[in-house]
Structure formats: structure tokens, C-alpha cells
Length: 474
Image (cartoon, rainbow, N blue to C red; front, side):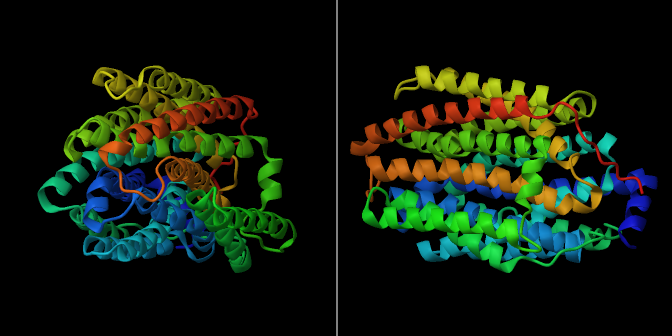
């Protein structure tokens, strides 16, 4: 079936739509499960591989960096060659990276496996969101995206707990092997059960030159964050800024750029929603990584105990996401998203005012619950507004932009943590003598995260309240 026949088929077969939703939700559960589970195990990895604080931050960063750099090319390939085909290929690559990570015994092998996982995840997750956008009409899309986001948050919920349990009982390598049965199940179901294919009616060739400029620019900026304030770090910073500018100019002049920045900037709902997404994820990801270190180093928790605390935020997010998705089909997304941002601000203020080496655990839990409520209210309405701002045959690229904004935010938060760890701790293993420095870094990150959340609230409210909704109907 071609794209129009596929859309017509799913519009007339609700059961088929539900099957696709279940398969994509399972795939969406896998990446955050692996990612959040590995965060809890970073102290165990650091001890086993004898690495310092800066290299410890590279373990999650290597995944995010490769994921970010693969996101836009994956969206373009999905629109050109078929979303289902790229979805399956991404699952295979993710599985290979997971197996390699599960047998890694050296830092280089672990980082390489995380890069492979990130590439596969970009193809896996981006096309999954685009498939949902193609299967469901605009009036039903918010509810479907709510379940998809809920699956992501469920993965974030289970990750710390399963990661901590696997680390304590089987070693940190087991974290990467645990999701393999589900990966294989998704690949089998996609090949056998998922009908049809989705392609763009006007596909564009992959902009390899633009992808290269973007990779060098963003990679150099992240390298700078782990080298500043040295001259080497300054050199990486200059190189990164130069290549980012070159990438922007290339996108303005190339016949088929990796992303048409002029069209994104021309659409106020789209540009504001993407900007808000960057700020929200920047306020969260680095903070959760540091809270994991804080709970294990400063508070003496085991990986399982730290996982139980951190899973509270994701559990709230998973519960709220489907409800927020349904509400976004009926009410203006900017209202829900802005309320979510201010809820996150409240949680960050709790941490900023009361977080110490002896803070009662109920205060930390309350902050995480408040943060989770905000994230749950923000994410699905914001995603729905992005997909509603583009025509159906551009869902692959819109999904890629949405996920790119998420990853840019996560990379911004991670780069901030890496920079501050470099300044406060340097190339030293985290020992009891450095717990005070780690606490100071955490306070700095909470303060900056508060600024990110307030900026996200501004972008969420400032988007155009009148949505341009593109229907899937042919």
C-alpha cells in the first residue's frame, strides 16, 4: 500500500490503529528504560572502569550526542524511504548497541556502544512518533500521543528501579541486556502485524554536508564544556560556534537543507513550541543525573534506593500524560504547557531553598512530584501542537524536529553539568573529600534550571493561540 492507501486503511480499521499504537508505545518505552537505568549505575561504572568525574558524565552524554546528531537525518530518511523501514532498521541498530554495551569491559567500548545505541534510538523513536502522526487524525492525535508519552515516562519510571536492581545483583552490564526481549518483540510485531508504509509525496535528498556541519558544531561545543576554562576548551568553543554559524548559513542557501530554518522561524506556533521544549528538557536532564549522584554519594543510598526515589517523578508523568493528551485535543495547548512550566518552577524552588546534605527525604520527593506534574502537563500538549502545525506528509521531519528539541535541551543540561563538574572537581574521582563540591555543583544546576523553566513558560504562553491544524484526511 502507498501512503494514501495506508492512511485510508487505518482510518477505517480502529483495531489496526490500536495495534500500531501498542507497538510504537513498546518501542518508546525501551530507550528511556535504558537511558534512565544507566544513570543510576554511573557510580558503579566509574568504580569498575576507574574513570573520573568528567568521563563519568560522558557515559550518558555519548548516547545523547549521537542521538541528537542522528535525529534530523533519520526524519529525512523516514519521509523518503518509508517510516516503517527506518523504524525496523533503527531497532536493529539499537539492539546491536545494547548487546555491545552489555559486554563492554573498557570505557572506549562502552562509549562506542552508547553512540550506536543513540543512532538506533534516533531512527527508532523519531519514526515511531511520525507513524502515530500518520495513523491518527488530528482530532484523535493528542490522546494517542498521550499514551506514547506515558510509555516514555513509564520507561523513565522503571529505569532507575530496574537499573539499580540489575546493578546490585548482576553488575551494571546487565542494564543494557534487560530490554533485549522487548526489542526483539517490537521488531517481530512491526514486520508481521504493522500494515502499509508511509512516505512523503515530495521527498528531498539527505543533506549530508549540512549533517556534517551540524555534527562538528554541536560535537565541538560539547567537547568545550569538558575542557573549559583551558585554552584547549576555548579552541573547541570557537570551532563549535563557527560550524554552527556555517550550518545555519548552509540551511539558508542549500536547495534541500537538513532543516528549513526559515520555515520553522516563520511559524510562530512551531518555533515557540520547539523553543519551549528545549528549555524544559534543559531544566530536567542534567538535574536528574546530579540528583542520582547526590543520593548515592552525599546520602549514602544504594542504586536501588536511589532508583526508588527518582522513579517518583517519572511515575507522576506517566500517570498524567494520557490525561494531558486528551485535554490538548479540547483546549489550547499553550495554557496546559504554561501551567506545566510553572509547576516545574515550583519544584525547582523547593530544591533551591531547602536542598542540603541533610534535607528530609519528603522534601525531595515533594519537589520531584511537583516537577513530574509539570512535565506531564507540558509534554503531550506541546508535542500535539508541533504535529498539528505541519501537513501529514511532513510528519517525519516534524517528529524529528520535536525530538531534536528534546535532545538539544538534554544536551544543554548535560553540557552544563559537565562544565560545572570540570570547574569544581576536574579530572578526579568523586571521593568523600569532594562531596561538598558535588553539592555546590548541584545548587548551581538547580539555579540555572530554574531560569530554563521560566524561559520555557514564556515561550509556551507566547505561541500563537490560534492553531493551524492539518488533517490526515485525503
